[in-house]
Image (cartoon, rainbow, N blue to C red; front, side, top):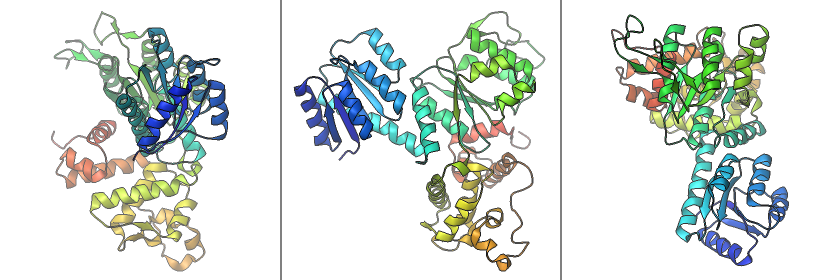
Length: 449
């Protein structure tokens, strides 16, 4: 049986009853409202996963109701139904964030198919962006709000907070979901190489340009382009990116013809761009062009009980990859996990749980299985300082950034798999495409390749 809560809004009682009976028979928890105003009163006191509303209601229209719902809580999905379809209303509904637009008469199977599709999309997003803390819900609301649009998005957050994951979820929930999601790490390439990757080049444009190459702006036409670490680009490159955003056109390196692009741009950075603008390190006009719709990925220390959810998720993931039976985390271990600040954020927690599963000897993750840097801040350890030696408390993470540690983990997996990317991705618990992006990000190449 299906599950989920649905509010049906229609000014015709018989139509409300038909939809209500169909959905209840399928197992959904439903309620009905005869008008947009009545629907908003219900929504003020009870949350629904999905609202199905007629477009041409008496009083408040379905479009107006959609706008009110999305403004208050974009995680509520909306399906619009109308007997008088028009291109204008469909475009307006899509612009305001509708999930689906159906024409009357609505076939029972079609209605159930669309409703099931909506709940599947909601479930996919919840699985991807785990957590129920206020900070996480606010981020999810923004993802769902901006995904249906074509607007440029700027994702801000510390290293390891999941900025790339958020970018992929925006794409997955957008009208461009069937088109490619292309990504590039702007900090990983020299300016010359970055320009060639973004804009492409003509044959003979430089010494090694033996043939014409399409750049990412061209390949991402009607798709999504993710510009990671945009805060690390030079002022000159920023000016070129700004022109594409403003004019929606560019020229290949060595080219003379302007090429139009309808690429949807999502940028991300762990830098404080506002401060960089003041310091003259980032163009003010590009900052304001990117910052139209900012999404903040909160650090793990601000995500409350999400830490427990994520710890269990990464424990199960690591156990599955390693073929181990590990099913629980001890109360003392959870207390230590909650007490630690996690400067490497989600990525660091994932590595910690992976280590705990590999080194653990029981079906429960114990305090002793955690990395030393976490134990150093554990209330249980600080209460008994002699419990572990100084050598045991020596951090296992190498000096330097968490990106350096991630690079080391990837290299280890590649060596263990004899540089088989598919197998290495499985060992790391990543998808093939994510590992490919990481290899490009860290400029990792097979020796003698």
